Length: 387
Image (cartoon, rainbow, N blue to C red; front, top):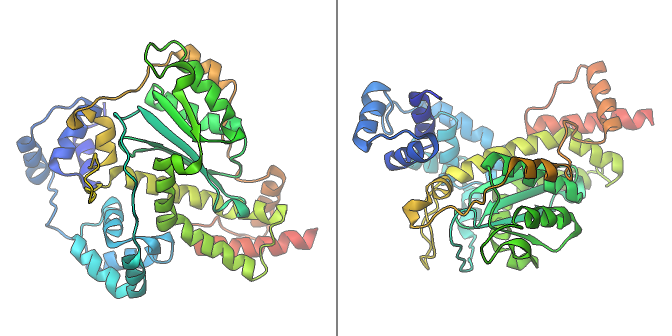
């Protein structure tokens, strides 16, 4: 069993309130502790405070400056504050707002002018309905993103970047990985029309074939147009605002400078240089989203709170989890129809050629977007010179 103090420290660093920490300890780790005792542990025994021992302001400024060179330039001050907390920096939200206004005043004005109108949407509880969709804004450059979100809690179930999202066996692989992790399947699965969803349709209906509810069997899978797949479509606008717009701008620059022509080789080089960085950003964004607090909307259509809490402790919202039990032998049968991501971000021949060039020319693996841009330009020259 994990050390209790380490678990508490983890949730504290995520910015959880004392109530949220107590709920998470009980629902996810079977640790029952009162709010009063938790405060005593955190403040006096572990020496953790929300408004004491602030990080050096220069460290905070340096961190935010680095974020502003990446897709972090798309975030508002609340999201930047969450990133600071998750990276171990103790700072007030107001301080982050002032720093961001000083470092990026133009970006603050751009974000302030944006507005988003939401449709009304209701789901019975977590795992009642999962929405699956592919995001194609980066597909012209060879980067394919696929995601799944829980309709009730808005918990992101998975968010994957790969060089393919049209293979139905791959999408089914994402689904089966999540079924293994959650130890069950949702009551209903919803996707767009498309051949890439053909296998998960069969898998979902197979897993729900013996259900005794009205949504069992064929009714457990729903397909429709994109604007009806509302939860995930709304989340894609969030993804673009906080992540992919940065990469779209970066790749558009390469195209405008004549360094990307859309050939198979150019796409493979983009995948080699950028795919792992983008997947890391998606993983961080998924973690941040699942642990941020969703505030009440103007029309009061809920629920509201942290997706992680809404997903793992639905009884606080007068509902329950609708996760359907799945047998181990059923999982194994379904996995035979799937393929799973490997460690190659692009075509294997291109991958091996690029690795050879990096070794021969003493080139390091990129750790920032700028490094990846430089690597792409250099590898493109070296590879094209050999052809």
